[in-house]
Structures are given as structure tokens and as C-alpha cells.
Image 1 (spheres, rainbow, N blue to C red):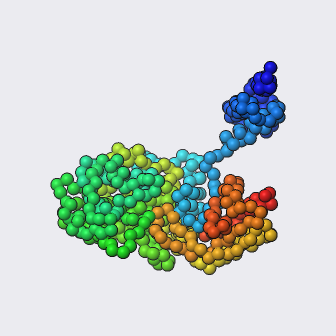
Image 2 (tube, rainbow, N blue to C red):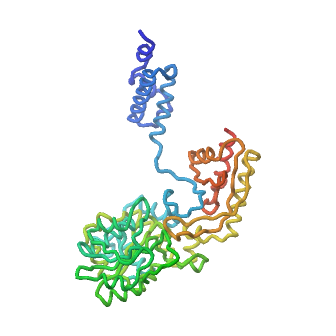
Image 3 (tube, helix red, strand yellow):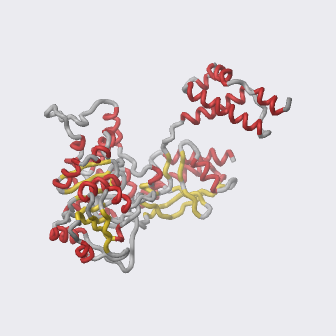
Length: 466
């Protein structure tokens, strides 16, 4: 008998290992189905190793250790919290906007009990879930009516399908943007069932271009705010109010997709001016759409505001039910919007607004606290420095805007910067920084209160292990 055959015969049966696992307290919190599946995978892996002429000496202890490690990995949550030290405030890969404390409290309160989601408590009759937020949205934007769906792409899809299905929608070529993940405005328009009619050129579109494009089958003028890029130089575009005036003259409604959308005039706080939702409503747009989890600082949602007649049509569309938001999103959105009744409070308590408008003096204080914590934890294991750099808004907002910041840089003495970045990313909690010029960069703008000590202790552990 060959060694291969001997080793294969030495592999214990899964029932034997399962019995051993039952008596091992380390497996007690793991579901039996997961333990069984892990044992089978470990045995199969061992068989392959034996047939390949590799692998360690087989023992019950070794097999159980491997199965335990695999089972623990299987039951770990896949969606976990991370520390964002990149300086990108609305980091799409890291979940965009952080929710405010009011929103978190309201979510918890609604999640653990029944609610009046679709019950009118005054009449005792069936209610409409959007009533939790539509009045508040109208109050903050000046719109006649509002409705909320699951995200802004859904809002655009729903509005176009309602207002322009099988008819032409006129839009500037320079506004046919890609909004991330290869998701493009023309694709959304196609799926909505409307007919795209491009006008103008990439860099210049005039009012006459819209006017000459009008035909018997024209249903809508669409304006898309290019919130994720900017064209400079020899450019021209049509202001929303001018397009609305043309639409009124021609009997054609105007829709604007604001993308990120904001309820705050950021120019008051030293940032570039972004058109607010109230600006778009005041200009006379029939329908305006924007996101909930970008500059608004709330949960993922697509908010549609505008004339009552248009919103009423949208409510009746069967797609509205397919795109509707759940009670937890409604709870978070209601609480976030409520803070906007006091702008100073909103800037203080909504994390996105707070991070975007954080004074440089506070950035310096945060950087110093982080520096001191790291220096105390790791001592001579790395070269630690301050570096004046830039944060970014992210999330397709404020294209090309640099937010001055002071970062803490770490250059380890006993391992490469790339290995340090990997180890930080694979730690618990995961810490996401960035690498520039052979330095590991930590930007305090997006590091939340109390996280500096976690970063410092994680760095110390990694550097001392290497």
C-alpha cells in the first residue's frame, strides 16, 4: 500500500469529527450546519493535499482546529464597521453619509416595535407611508409636493417613466454623465422607456438648441447637475430658470436631477456654491430629484419634489411601489430632515455637514491628538510626521474641491508601507488609510471621536509583531 493510500485511509469520518466538535466548548455557539459544512470542507482539502503529495501529518486536533477557524470565518458578519482615515467624507465604498444620533435613536425606536407606517392615527384608516416626511420636505424646499424612493437613480427612473414614457426627453450632451459603477444617465433614461434627444455639444449648449429640438413628441426638458465633474474653458450651459421659461412658452415641463442635492448654501461656510434644492424649486422646475445619503447627510434615498400635479402622477405609477423605502429609512430620513429646521444645529449634529465645514483650527487639534496617541503607542517603531494635505468631499459632490487638512503620516522602520496598509485594513475594526510617497496617511477629518486610540493601538500591535 502506498503512502498516499495510507494517508487517505487515515482520514477520519465526518461523523467522528462532528462528535468531537460536540464535546469541544469552542464549537458551542456555532450552528451545527456550519460546523458540519466546515468539517467536510477541511476533509476535502486534506484529501486534495494528500493526492498532491503535500500537507501536514493528520491528527484529529489539527482537523478540528482547521474546521473551527473556517467555521468562525463563516459566521462572521460580512457587513462590518470600519474606521475611515482617508479624508474622503462621502466615501462611496465605505457607505457614504454617517447618520446623526437623532436618526439612529429613531431607527431603534421604530425597529423594535410596531409603528403607524401606513395607518392614519387620526382617522383609523389606511395611511400613506410618505406622510412621515413629505410635509417636512416641502417645508424645507418650498415644493408643493414630495415623495421618496430607494435612491436617486430610482427617482430619476420613476419620474422619467411617469412623465415621458415613449416620448422624447431633451437633454444637453454635456450632462449625460456617468454617476459611478458604470451607471450612466442615458442607461437610466433607456430603462425608463423614454426617448433620449441630445442637444448641444460636450462643452457648449445654448437655449436655442433646446428650442430647435422641440417637436410633436417632446415630453420633457431634462437638466442634470454635473455634480461629479466640471468642464472649464470654452463652455456654455443654460440656466435652469431660462430653461423653465422656455418650457413654459412651449408647454413643456422641466425636470432637474440635482444628483447630490443640498438643503444648505455651502458658500456661507467657505465652500463653493452648490445649487440648493430650494433654488431649483424656486426656478420653477416641474420635478427635482436628489439623493438622501450625500450632501443631505441622511440614509440612502431618492427624493422627488416639485409641482403637485407631477408628484401625484408619480405616486400612481406602479413602479413607485417597487422602489418604495422601508420604515427604517423613513425613520432616519425624518430625523435628519428635522435637524434642518435649525441650520446651526444641522451643521453641528449631521456628521457629513460637520466634517465638510470643520474649521482648520479643529483639524489641527484632531491631528495633534492623533499624533500624540500614535507616538505614545509605537515609540521608535516608525517615523511619524505632520503633513498639510487635502481631504475630498467624495460621493460625486463638489468636483475637484480640495479641503485643507493636516494629516499624520507613518513610515514604519521594520516593514513596507504597503504591508502596513494591508495589515491595518485586515485588522478589527478595519482601518482604511491611504498611501502617498511611501508614507501611510491618516486624515483626521473623517476619524470619529475616540477612534484615535484604536488607530494607535492597532498600529502598535502590527509594528511590534513584525
